[in-house]
Length: 179
Image (cartoon, rainbow, N blue to C red; front, top):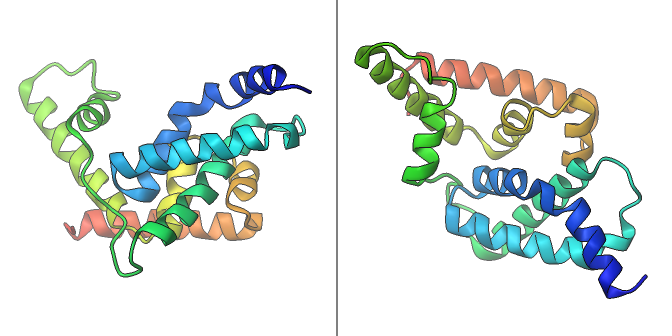
């Protein structure tokens, strides 16, 4: 294979999942700027290793690279005691708040939905990284348990237990009005 065919394969395998890559990096890093750096580094890693892609699930392959890049980038660039959460930028926040609310009839229901979305976003951001990661992969990226296990390099039982615990923590956080 030559560089032109590597580029074509990279475009076919990696590029369609750039939005998913950014979303995952954003949730793991907690910062838009950091997520952009992580996705750029993950893109370079993927391009270097595109010949190693064996034709399995390209989305899982991409998210695995982004996940691993996120953790190595965070370990290198952030002190261990820094909390890995940050506010969404205005565009992302508006998109999140408007998701599923296109058919609202009153200003009151729009305000309630906006407040609920913000509460869920804050509650998710407050989860410990291992639980937030599994919850994001399942609920935002809509991955099945097997694919999450592949991406996170965990046994499927661990994925299932972390997801259950993440959901309990999220519910408790929302019920208690924390954060």
